[in-house]
Image (cartoon, rainbow, N blue to C red):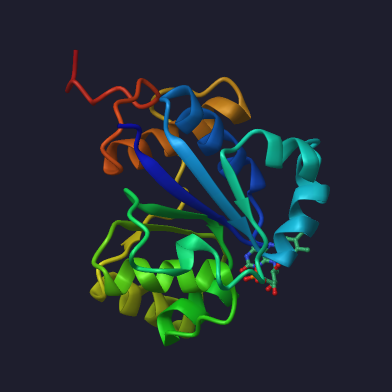
Amino acid sequence: MAKKILIGITGASGFIYALRCITHLKAANVEVHVVMTKAAQITRSQEVKLSLTELKKSVDYFYPIEDIGASIASGSFQHDGMVILPCSMNTLAEMACGITNNLLTRAADVCLKERRTLIIMPRETPLHAIHLKNMTTLSELGAIIYPPMPAFYQHPQSLEEMVDHTLGRILTLLGISQGLTPPWQGWR
Ligand SMILES: Cc1cc2nc3c(=O)[nH]c(=O)nc-3n(C[C@H](O)[C@H](O)[C@H](O)COP(=O)(O)O)c2cc1C
């Protein structure tokens, strides 16, 4: 059976991470469910050329952020993990406090309470103590805090390559085989 992965997109910079993650998941025959915040509509329009209609067509399920009665709001809906990328400090704070007043934060809260894989890609700099405390809280609850940290030792030739290098490890964490981030072979 195909894996089911939830993608949450927020209004932090880095919409390209979500787009390319969706592309790689679809290429791996994953069933992709997407929910995005209202602020993510702004970053989408500022940062990528893809329209909302095109985005909706590229995924299997797209949920309105206010649809708190959607399947992914319930722990009874089985899936194989959720990735929030990029994750704003606002959504990070809501999740750390257990606030679930939209479908994205509710679906994330379900992952935490059901002990399912939740990968959070926070994006902000510099970070103040509340940001750091929120990440610690979520990490203690079992979430994986996965900031985008480009590596330079593989000499990326494009923005896409740099983004994909970051995404490869996320696919691995989700149990999906990938060729984006070849394992380090030591000095050869
Ligand atoms: C172009 C743009 C870039 C932004 N980048 C960031 C960012 O990198 N990190 C962040 O925490 N907020 C960023 N923001 C602010 C968030 O969008 C804002 O805090 C919003 O309330 C987040 O809402 P959400 O968590 O519901 O998506 C950005 C806003 C805009 C318009």
